[in-house]
Image 1 (tube, one colour):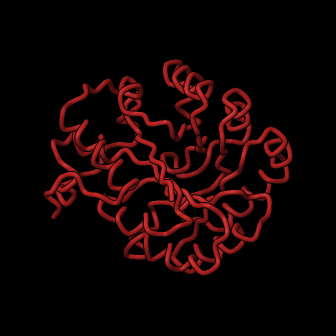
Image 2 (cartoon, rainbow, N blue to C red):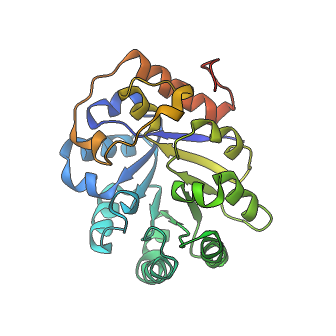
Length: 255
């Protein structure tokens, strides 16, 4: 069972820390030539690219016009349909409108579509999941980090859908504890994850094992600043990739 990892890092460190699996944020692609050029190069090299809609940072997806502008240029492997954080009704409506407008064109180009269930609570989230799981035009499901506290752990949400899910799932982001990955990765339908936590922790002088001390940094930290690579950052990235891909903790210092 191959697990794939996208490392989110500052733009100036993309070359150093990126794997061959990427998540690209629409708003940054449109606003940074360096960001855009890097991912166009990686796409030309045959890397796997998920084009995200920006909802995690902006709380609602960017307009379809901008998403379409980027996927037409980038030709990613997957496009994430519009969603709104914690809003089941807007998410279903916007996703279905997106499918009606773009699913045929995207599938004709070999681009798959990911939908992200949303809801005010675990019950609504599961209802939204059932709609998307049954929709044949949706190829992947994205399981957002924002539901970690609503289920106590994201693995509880994965347990809930395990008997019925029939689409591959990508884990969108990571809540504070990186060791949750050891449980999340055990589900055979969970194929991949993205997170900035390995880099973000290093900027706070923390190893992955120091997760309890972590404080949230502004969402634009990695795009707007030019951080230097450090040995701690490199270790955190290596440990994070190993955790998800192999289920092994390289730190020997887990709390």
